[in-house]
Amino acid sequence: LLVLDMENDYLPYMTFMMPNAEAVLAAFRKAQQPVVWTNWYRQEDDGAYGAIDRFWGPRGLYPPGGTVKGHAENPMWIDTRYGKNATDTVPAMGPITEDEKSLVIKSMHLSKMADKDEHGDDILYPMLQAWGVDTIVIVGAWTEDCVIATCYEAADRYGLDVVLVTDAIATGSPVHQKAMDTMQAACGKTLMAEELVQYFASHRHKLGPAQAELNYGAVQLRRRAALLSAAQAEARGREGISVAVAAVIALMAAAVGEAIA
Image (tube, rainbow, N blue to C red):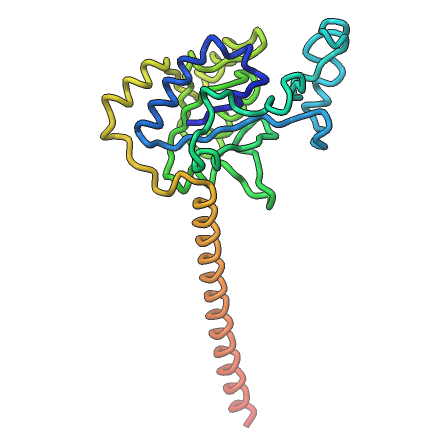
């Protein structure tokens, strides 16, 4: 389950679908299936200015004078009027245990598949790989931004099946249904929250356990161990090739020496 950007700053746009999202999260927890939380972390002074800012900057979400602030507002930036907790997941949908809290991604990209760690490595996909996940279920916000971007990249680049919980996805713009229709037509299966919860209840035998600990640190250790093992195997292979090449060169030199003699 991906809980996409269900944070305090967006709560006014999500209130209507909160019970549905909560029911889906409860079903995943009961079945001990992986859950990852993302929180949109873009702010005006974050140093990550890019194409999306250039798109929204001149126009804003509202025309000048159309907001309380009296100027155009870039919707990519978290509204600091909600204070320091603006980027935290709303309490009803937030992680509880320390293991769950380790699975929160501070997201700087519309596609959650694109977020990187401090070393420049992907965050989300290695976790999905380690757990043996082949299907992701999405709840959260915003439909035409992070939801659709994640849906397309997960399906197209990584070959993951995508399920969109229709009544647990929201946005702050009037294009929600257009975005849902686009995803449904191209790469995402849609289910209502109640349908998904019922499926979990009646198909528990099909929900295999995660193949690794539901903890980001544990997944990272496994990944680094696998990378180290692969590097060591490659080095041994190169060493073997070098020995073989040296032996061939020695034989050739001996043959040449005999010919000269």
